[in-house]
Image 1: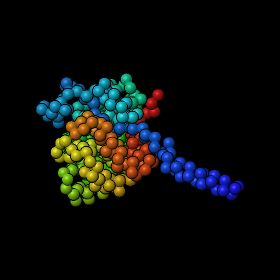
Image 2 (image 1 turned 120 degrees about the vertical axis):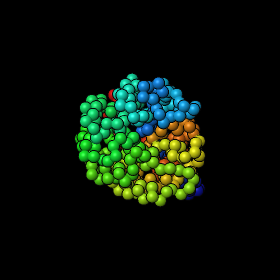
Image 3 (image 1 turned 90 degrees about the vertical axis):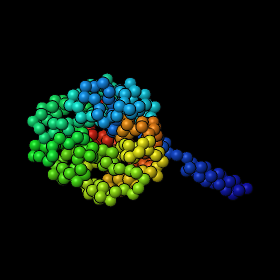
Image 4 (image 1 turned 180 degrees about the vertical axis):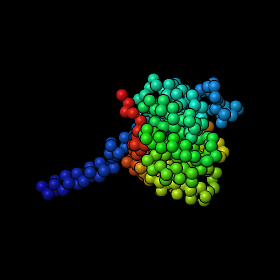
Length: 314
């Protein structure tokens, strides 16, 4: 009798252990707080305007201000934002700082745009003035105003590194091989490639020349890659929302940059041309959650802090 009782208890314990092993560990399944490193805010009535938005674009040809964005951030568990300037207007560097000053806990940092002045005498005074605000974490180079990468251009990038600021590159004005050369010459400069290095998606295999250049630049350890604008990489809008449409480029990015050099960005509100914010977040999570909770924590939070180094929210 005693043996039968003991065996029953052992069987019960084993059964309970089996059930518990199937239950998720709270630390492993708690949602990762999102730091979104590519959100745009704009006022369509700003003096410089936004020439890349077509007048007949019913989705984007309007203003997107913090009042529009903050409710979306709350609804999707977004705890921090790096705002990236949407155009190249020099006054808009300060405007982005001003329009987000009311909520520094959410708007952790601003990436401005100094494309017009990099490599000119106007760069240093403007850049140093902007750097007086610790939330000015860096700037974007999107447009190309100089044919060659001059000594003055490199001097300004060297100053950027000395100030502890970053550079986002939007490929188009600058080529991948040029950014790789910049990274090689200035290993102390923190660089990030916006929008998966400018990849173009059309349902066909990735362009071999682009793949070769992408692999090459990934060898520069001071370069990061932003997993952003997934929907926007498709030539035709609205873009597909199934993960299979993005697996090739995500596999390549993860293979080349690894879990420590990839950073999430939604590209909101440009992403609205295909779907809402939750959709781009869900697509990205579906891929990276399969890599494990630790990888998702890096992509959505830790890598952003290590790269942009925004001030600690008070």
